Structures are given as C-alpha cells and as structure tokens.
Image 1 (cartoon, rainbow, N blue to C red):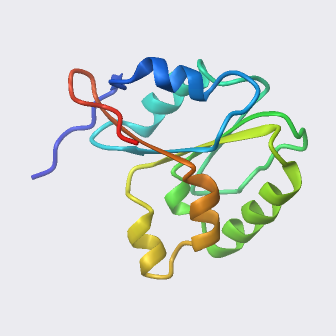
Image 2: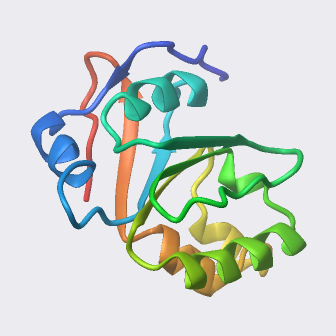
Image 3: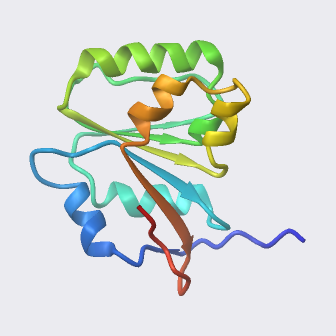
Length: 143
C-alpha cells in the first residue's frame, strides 16, 4: 500500500539536529525521508544550516559550489549516476571541513552500495550522521 507523503517534518531530537548544523565542526548528514516529501525536509534543514547555502536537486546536473564554506544540500542523492558520484567524492576531498554536506534520500543508500550502484567510499563520507525524517507526530530521529 502506498502512503501519501507528508509535507510536514518531525525530528524527535530537534536540539541534537540544531547542534549538528551549527558551530565550528559540522559533520556531513544523510537524511532518509520516510513517507515525507524530500523537498519539505530540505526546506526545514536549510533554515538550520550555516550559510552560504547551495542546493542541488537530482536527477539532473550536479552543481557543486566553488566556495569552500557553508552548506551543500543534495536532494535525492540516491539518484546520482556513477560519474556524478565520482565527481562528488573528488570534490569532498578538496573542500576539507569547511563545507557541511546534507544529503537527502527517499530510499536507504546501503542497499545501493551492496548492489554496486553507489560508491561505498562516498556513502561513508556522506553518512557521518544518519537521520530518519518522518511525518509530524511520528518518531523522527535515529542515530
């Protein structure tokens, strides 16, 4: 049975989420959107992250920021093709710790890694902190 996607987002540990997106050290975050519209999650998270913001929605062209600071939000990261995955992996090696990458996916990435459709090294770079977004009123954060 297909459930409609919610446009409101809940994170049960909102204080923890705010701590992960502010301050000097901001780890990369992978958010799996469970029955929640990925766009709603991205709007919620961008308000918490450090500017400058760069949002890249996939599928389509992977546009990586020239600036080596701020936040890169990748919408539907599970839709990156192999060339885009390689480019992102290389870019992450160049930007250091000044850029936080917040990746959103409507599907878990681990099965894609296990099937050889997503680079394992990129998965671990993006998945420093793993969160699950759920509709408002449901339990929302796992780590």
